[in-house]
Image (tube, rainbow, N blue to C red; front, side, top):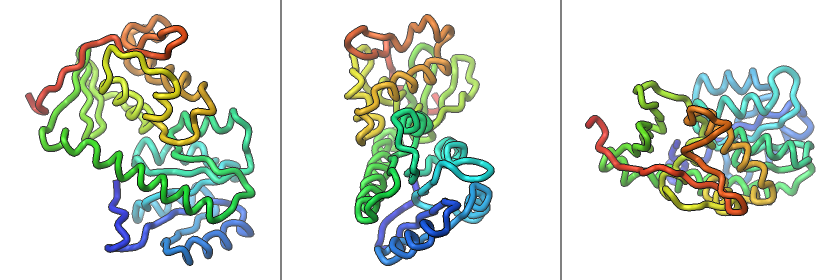
Length: 251
């Protein structure tokens, strides 16, 4: 996570929206609020910005010509763990669920109150800063979390299978797996998982957890249709049915 301390420099935002009539006034407003804003009219322009530097947070429209915001968001959370907020006119629950599945940190429906957006930006940044500091104890001990032959490095966010091969996981999948590994053999209901993984109003969309669990199962279960590691507890939620051990990295 990039340092976002205002003592050193202003928070850097990347605003990606093909509508100049919305993008430019919003960029001006955010600049007056103390943010450093880079504008992009497309995902291609955003990728050019990313080649030069990584901002602290991305604001993305969904519907854009060429590559859409969902695809760009997936790239950001999987390759850079970059906090992301969608700014979009698409407010249906299914669209919100897709955004949450991908790993976006918030979802603001147009039209919105700019002051609310600033509050959400700051809230997302605070959560991201806390999330970045949580693995500090693991960093000091350089520990791996090991379960059924799998190993997760919380600091590097690297998952390896029982044969030692690295398995790519998104930021959302990492957070969900960490929730299970920190509470093995305990039933976690959907509300608690959403609060632990998303930390926002996502509790309104229970299907977001079901879909994320399904995606994680496809990564770690020998047979995702007959899961043995992440078990469904009917009427209760989900449970990691495995012992979790801590092992020094490199051991």
